[in-house]
Length: 452
Image (cartoon, rainbow, N blue to C red):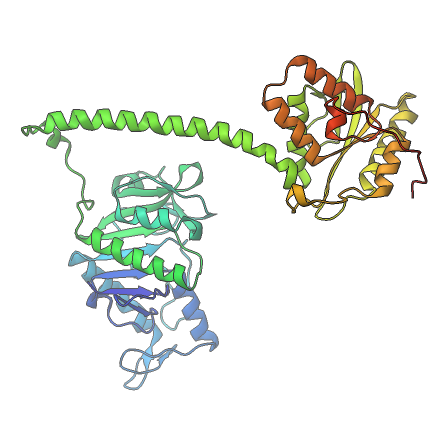
């Protein structure tokens, strides 16, 4: 099998890599792999003089009429349509990296040139709006498990960056296309069409990669092309085929249905377990996240301990327990946590005091040296922060301490234990250790010193 790749270099001995301006005739190959965006790029390079191109007979390709010593770019591009038609008529395969259509201006005598001028389409269909539209995303969902290119998309999912989608609301797309892969909201991003006796397979575009990953992608595409050229995926069986009895087939079909039902049940079980796993694993964000993810982790932990969260999402945290209200300030830092959460908390409490004549409880939850192993963190809270919280009777907890409390809760702490935790947090002053919050030690209060 001979494979020609246009505008999408693939390092493999089975593949010849060229551009649309320099390649040999497309019908000289069994498979054509092409990135339509490369046609736009190469024509722009030719017109601006950024790059030069030579045809196979070594004549320079110019934006000028063809002569005995030069090849006209228009003639070089126009003949690609006939070559592609002949390749497909011979049962060939064309693999297209999906791109939105775009006109290409500036070519002498070819003002109607676009990215898909070379590719024939099924009757009533065109490789542009409203059938093929621009899109951007990285989500890939396999829709045809047995299709040879499904394995390529699955194994190289992280390199996919699709740039076009087919509109399956269009009757012609549904009539002629067989969906291979879908993106977000299940929009078709990989679709296959039978054209002139051959096959045109649109797959999502890939990001530019190099090294072993590119080599692996090239080999995966070669393997998929070889399988697809001899596969039975080219056509769907007519509806009446299922009525043609075969000895033993009915029993095997029943076994297949039973196996499929078991597989579906297993998938549902996996999804349920994964959901529970992810819900628990998210609590680890208390130890390493910052910003809004850290705030969400703290909020979830406080709720599990039994606090009522009365603030709206994205607003400063406000909690209640036993009729007592507390303002909570959070901070997670790669380095030591200094006095800023105390400063923010002090401002919030002063503002509330001026408006309402009373100040709620203040709590600071800080996570210092968040990128280090918790067992290796030293002095994650600054001394001014400790002293300030102690002087103003604010409770000060670390992310590690809150995580340890959460483990006790998830391990089956009873209601009286949770009530004790909430009361110690709400009545605490200064840095609260795990032992003090669990009631296993008496926290000694040092003499308050200067704050800053």
